[in-house]
Image 1 (cartoon, rainbow, N blue to C red):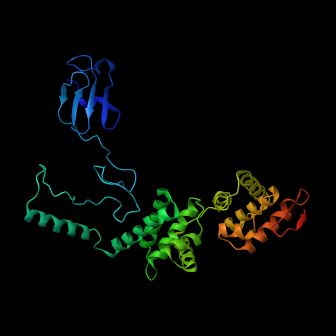
Image 2: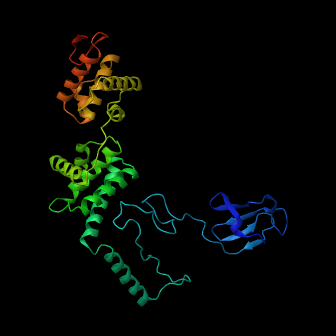
Image 3: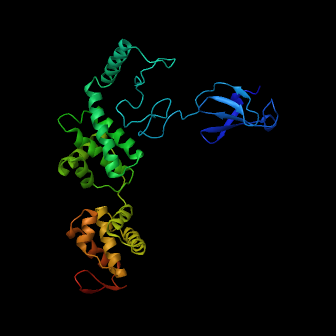
Length: 333
């Protein structure tokens, strides 16, 4: 009989077709007509033509691990390794199915003993202040992932920075939320994800100034080098909030590209600069929008939008065009 190890699995997960590497031996050796299929529910290898059972039990064909932290019920080995978990996903747990190895229900005294073991096993995983700190922080970090729309890559980077901060003792005398928010903002800056300090402080309910101080402390103590923020990353986010069309958005990207060539972007807030470029693009394309709407969508003040707008207008388009702003005044450039 053909060995199961020589086969590869293809087809539907419920009824997976097992095909041999050697094409001459794919058919059933009993009827010589059907092909070998595997039923994942019964654990049998059978012929789809005559129904002959080749093997009565095969190993589980389900996923070894799940790709995310959300659902581990379909996995045989729990969730994957992750820095965003206090135990890195390596701890074992006592299952909640009160049955023995043969599927028989446990007796009442044994069920009580297993329940106590399960409780103390859970408590032993956070028996130190270090583990409790990480558990509180990463529970909050998982909530921020959904509210801010962040990817697992950013979560892993934020968890790595926070672990380094805890190892350095930066959380002593400071709130967990403040250091965690600063770590998350540093991860967003490192991955060039357009999330401002104001957005994170609002979601985590921490004062912006205190989080900014924690961020500077992390940069100094951990010696992190952050890349220069790119305003083009913020254009799509602001445009989606203000319902600006694609043509105006592309023009704003061209304005930012031209401003980069003239070294106007250096030292400017990326959100404010992107908002000003979008406002200038709206004025050039005749779209009616106010500086207040642009400032509200970007999270900066109207003064910032106005100052950056005037700087872009005077330095980039001195002799090219004329257009109107929201105050109904015509400017000749």
